[in-house]
Image 1: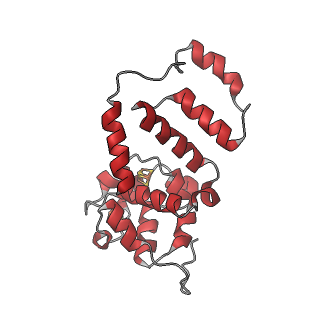
Image 2: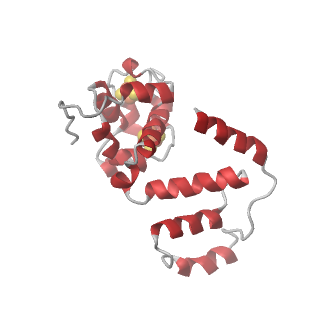
Length: 184
Ligand code: SF4
Ligand code: SF4
């Protein structure tokens, strides 16, 4: 259970989340349709509806330690179910961005943020995801160089991993998108 600090050292997050996500959270009336379809809420014992309620209640940086922020699979079930058109997936994405900006991601979910960063870097460089590059960056960052390496030959044999980076992507456009997003 999240304890919302009344003795605020940090500002409430709701304005920043609304600004980044473009979502008006005041429209949420806590029907919980988003939560009933969320595939991860039971596992992490938190839910998209709870996160929105905690934002309503002026939660600050303490909310960034919620496990669901990094467990969220961006499946958009919450988004499609909401009768008020609230984009729950965009809210989670905004919280991840704020978490990264405030360097709280590592505290919250160990290596998930590192994996996220490694994935995005390969998309930025190659225009598409490049699994081997992503795995290498993740392993270097996590220090777990030898973990799961026994699966590597089988995955290569079955064509699940490509040695060379992907070709054919519109790299210039993807780079431009990343540049604009960073400026924003
Ligand atoms: S489905 Fe929409 S209105 Fe209902 S709790 Fe979730 S975000 Fe709020
Ligand atoms: S986008 Fe995230 S929060 Fe929303 S239903 Fe999917 S996993 Fe749950």
